[in-house]
Length: 265
Ligand SMILES: NC(=O)c1ccc[n+]([C@@H]2O[C@H](COP(=O)([O-])OP(=O)(O)OC[C@H]3O[C@@H](n4cnc5c(N)ncnc54)[C@H](OP(=O)(O)O)[C@@H]3O)[C@@H](O)[C@H]2O)c1
Image 1 (cartoon, helix red, strand yellow):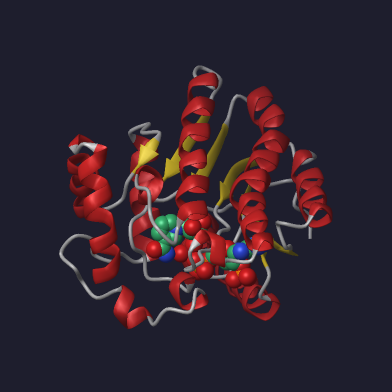
Image 2 (cartoon, helix red, strand yellow; image 1 turned 90 degrees about the vertical axis):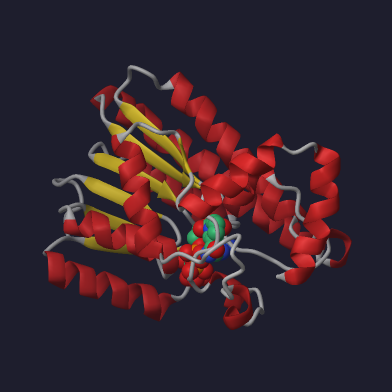
């Protein structure tokens, strides 16, 4: 396998859901891929299918992104790849306990995966992207970047970090040929909620406020946002309307609304 001749896309957390959908779309566009995940059999089977269907090279990296050694190895690898055009920082997970009831290490792991790994990987790829005058970084945040959520204190806060970090990078990189997007989906049908221990039937129950989307829809909208050079991409009209109404409300009203909304969900 030679990953140094063709243009390359690196996607973290491509075992399922949004990451797997990004891997497929960039494979269809002819990119060689570096994909990361932890469920070995599942990600290897995705790699096999994509490489045989689209005649591309796919390298799988099994990486726990909260571990310094794994993260360092991935960052060093992609730093050396002069033709790496795309980085999608997508790996992430949720938890459902109150902050003080969750094991402290889980909070550190979330900070490392959602924020530290993302920062390190952006820092690794940007010098080459800038000297090539060409590159794209998609950082997967969440529509909850604006919303304080009980049981999701770390999740909302780490996703807010991604949103503001990406916007600042976007401004720094103006005129350098490198695009940056903070992708902020609402509910998406993936393995995410089952891993949290939820029954997905309950979560995806259409509430009228937020309709669950597919990963493919989210990725399609992300690419459309890029065409329009939108740095914050919120897929789904419902989510967009909900967030823009929400932003107009005084915080005191939001603090009253949120707990009852969470209870309903
Ligand atoms: N689903 C939603 O409703 C939703 C909404 C807004 C934002 N998001 C965000 O979208 C992103 C993708 O999530 P998804 O919904 O597609 O969920 P998913 O199907 O569970 O995929 C998450 C991916 O992240 C990887 N990952 C999780 N923890 C990791 C860790 N500690 N180290 C390395 N890799 C790790 C997983 O690897 P393994 O499975 O191989 O362990 C998997 O490949 C996440 O950042 C999530 O916060 C999701």
